[in-house]
Length: 138
Image (cartoon, rainbow, N blue to C red; front, top):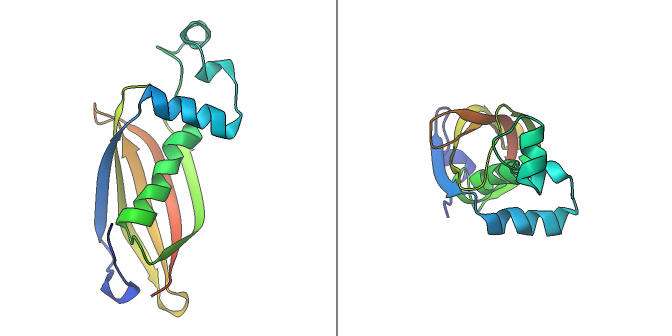
């Protein structure tokens, strides 16, 4: 876990991490969210609608933005205030995702940080983009 405080962060500060989407993550998200849309549960249904396999939940992939700010940028000393995200391409179980965020704006008066973030899969394709706003507690 990183421990950036507001005074240490600069525009351009970048952090990233990788995660593999496992069947267990997908199952746990299904149980936690209660979302039983068959697009996420069965390959046959997803294939019938033009996808290669059942889809990983977009909100499961978006939850990695929480990991980005809560663990990596800035890490311990933050509170997640806002997210605006777009899902650009499907994610499937077994995909290896790289989550990257770069500080684009600093607001000294409120100790808030605006981060541009994105997620790419193992083929380098952007599957999601986001703008994140984070408050620093220190």
